[in-house]
Image (cartoon, rainbow over all chains, first blue to last red; front, side, top):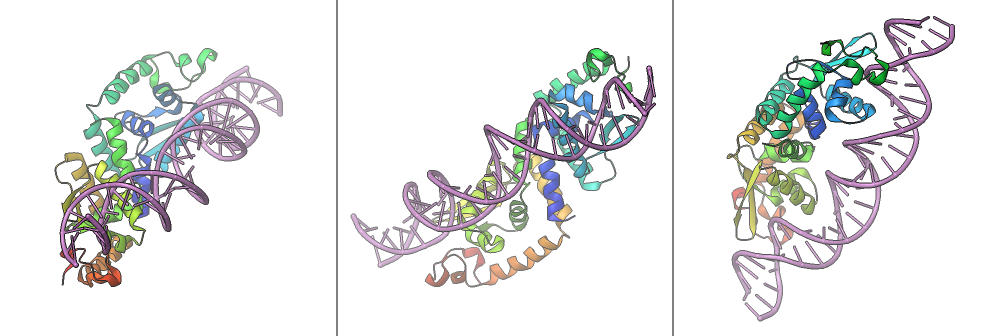
Length: 129
Length: 129
DNA sequence: TTTACAATTCGTCAACTAACGAAATGAAGA
DNA sequence: TCTTCATTTCGTTAGTTGACGAATTGTAAA
């Protein structure tokens, strides 16, 4: 790995929203609208953040129809070790604990209240009750 | 560790000059003028970079008279593991290999040619032949 | 086909960062 | 004390980043 590759990786985790997103993917995949709900950011902002994590090879995407699911990329050694370090270091942080309970609610909430809002669109099957 | 503490740490290593400086300290302490020689940056810039690494608790300082020596801070768990990861991931990178041989030259070069320039100031005892 | 819509890309703005030289700091030596 | 000088801090400038809404893309349903 080059020094530039390494700094791309560090830059990817030098923003708190991206760190929170990465850790949210710890034991499940999530779609952009769920991450938007978690981070309380505009969807375009979330998409940008996720593309930076993807470029750093920390996450990967799985596309199903109109939906894109993000999950941890477990094919890269350094990235995997860094993700493990982030999880280990932050698992007891207030923000991450709060996020964990918010994620539970998000996974249990009506899909309509996430992406589709009042339109009742079927966005994120993994969150189905 | 809080998410903000973690991002400070990531930001500290999201600049290639700081990564190179950190790894240069792998098995020796160095003073600002030696790091300036290695990185080929203005001394004020090097000082700023090192203060960012210090704030992130990746390095510490030892002051002796007018000189300040930087070395790895081995008192912090996460920082130590991150430093180890950086070293492991980059030890074979071209930049770091080139730096290693430059550091040898710096340690062997006349002190006058570093800090003191033509003035013959005794800057960095650790570089004495 | 046409419409709907999740996600991405684009354009813009405010805030931040890395670089430098100049000025300030502070510890030795004259 | 006064000077020297390694380092830090300050002030400035150019380039980068994170945020948003608007426009675009691409897939699926009507």
